[in-house]
Amino acid sequence: MVALDFDGTCVTHEFPKMGKDCPHAVEVLKKIVAHGAGLVLFTMRSGDYLDDAVRWFAEREIPLYGIQMNPTQHIWTDSNKCYAHLYIDDAALGCPLIYDSQFAKRPFVDWVAVDRLLMKHDWYMEPIEK
Image (cartoon, rainbow, N blue to C red; front, side, top):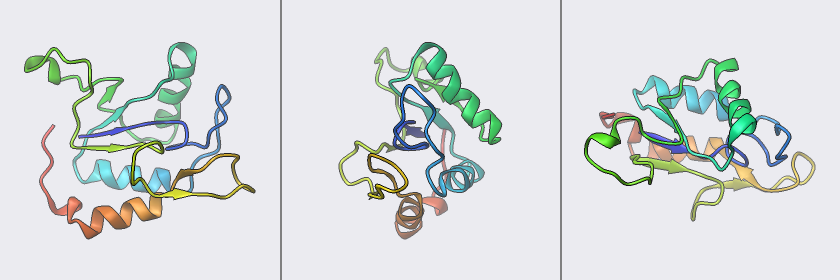
């Protein structure tokens, strides 16, 4: 289970507009899903803005397992914190970022580096449970 932010993570920060796709986000997210992990969109967006983010995944044929929550965690907890094995967020301590002021005004997730970290730590080799 991977919980991920949207603005600054999947797309550049342009809220309330839709930002540009972060380079390599789509291919790495598809690789994560192909590995068997469910993706939970965990973002501050709500209402129509959340719908825009959900549509972004659908248009890129990236399935979401959950939106704003892990749909199975209610079985064992009442917590409103989204349960996941991994959280990818541009605001997370240690998340690799790209600082490219010609592409975006604010830093955004470096998906090539994320992919390398996942490979380095054999994350793609571990069985994933939903």
